Length: 459
Image 1 (tube, rainbow, N blue to C red):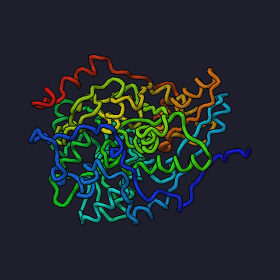
Image 2 (image 1 turned 180 degrees about the vertical axis):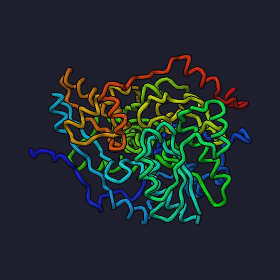
Image 3 (image 1 turned 60 degrees about the vertical axis):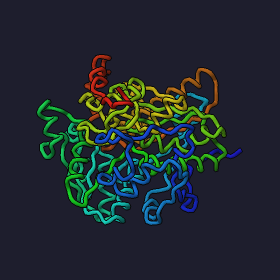
Image 4 (image 1 turned 135 degrees about the vertical axis):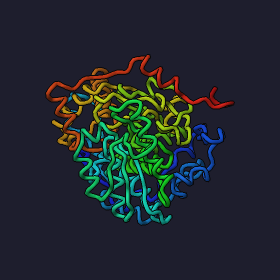
């Protein structure tokens, strides 16, 4: 039997021509978003002031199983897709495991991450609608970079609110976003009412994604012909990111493989939701039963320690409320937390699947994450993003379990991007100054106490 190649590439003709909408196969749908103004389920029209009309439609569409990818987006994808599925032979050897380890590498574009898959779609629909500008938030900077690339390509001005702690830790992310003509503002800032309120309470706030979202949404709804776009959490984003999992499944089928375990890092859920989409479809329809594992940071543990409840998607409490696993929209991750995965909640789709028992979740401390990142880099030559390294950590742990039991399981994980803009964090790990922070129950209770009260729904 011939050896499976290190890298499995699809041809352009094999690339998916449609995105997959996981909601169409879910046994029970996520609870609807709530309009904070009316206290009633949000309608598609309620979203029009914030999102492009087509994206608002995708957000609310629970029935269309496959959505055609517009030709312009397909052509853009061809500049960096299909991305390779890689067999981690050297990692397997170093671990001494009988497990077969594969990873889907999404770092082959300037953003260094999977984020461009949705950024190009959202910028395209903004252009089609004739909008004059967009706003967004970014945590570690991958989403801001990706959207700046896409907006530059389509000629749309962009303002990026970047979480302040990341803004300070990653100056080169700011520089590359500005290379693509976008404006970058450290959040919380004095440019919005939301930012000013947060700074009044804590002038030294390092910020959070929830805070940055508030500022970006506020700017969008108060600026003519401007809309807001989000890089994670939303149904529309998981739809666009399904191309990751669709390509992965086609590539694995081409070598007669199927994963026993699918592992992804989890912040808001974009990468994880995209990677697992077709495998979760198999699970929902009874075709297969892979284990699906979400890996999140111990410092921001929404799935493993959060509450399944309605919450605002932003700190300023101006967005619709979503039913999700959340730490409370006022939760602020520790400033010593390196990298992204800083969001207080989890995608409503993934929250519902986790709540209903279709997937598992684990949390890991960042020193263990970087230990895995360095080990992986030494054996596979790719320096992973800190976010990706959460999945690597758990993939290694699962492979070592196989070593103990002798089981030859097939593991697939998402390598969401590269860590070349994360060297401040790598330096902290290498010089021993990196520390772990795990919030206490009392820390988390403060966020839970602030969860919204919705008469008749969430008292």
